[in-house]
Amino acid sequence: MSGRAASQPVDALFADPPLLHVWDGESRGGGLSAEIGAAIAASLAAERSSSRALAETGAGLSTLLFLTLGASSVISIDPDEALRARVYEEAARREIDSGPLSFSASGRRLSCRGLPKKVDNCERRS
Image 1 (tube, rainbow, N blue to C red):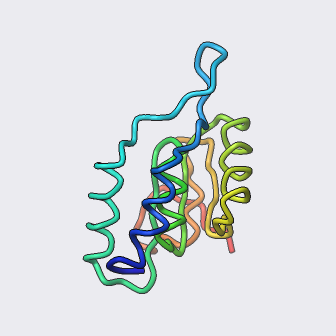
Image 2: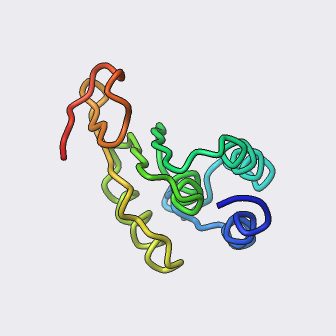
């Protein structure tokens, strides 16, 4: 995606940000603002790459942003199984393809499906 076509789904995502995190028993949004999200989207669009593999620590709105931007692989390193379920549920609700998404709960060995082979400390799974 590029240009205005890419910004429409991103704009929709930030117009109604999901409350994916639960802190002190309350559903809350994370720390990703619309301004930072737009900057990330612009930076990734400027790369002009047809396939893009991304890894992130944590999960939430940024995960949905990366999926919305058409990443070929998104690896979220987060041990919270309930958060994982909420991310998948929110992606389905918004009709965002979650096929490229995988989670890793281990900081020592990462599931690096889709990342370049030069990345160390990864378990490669097909």
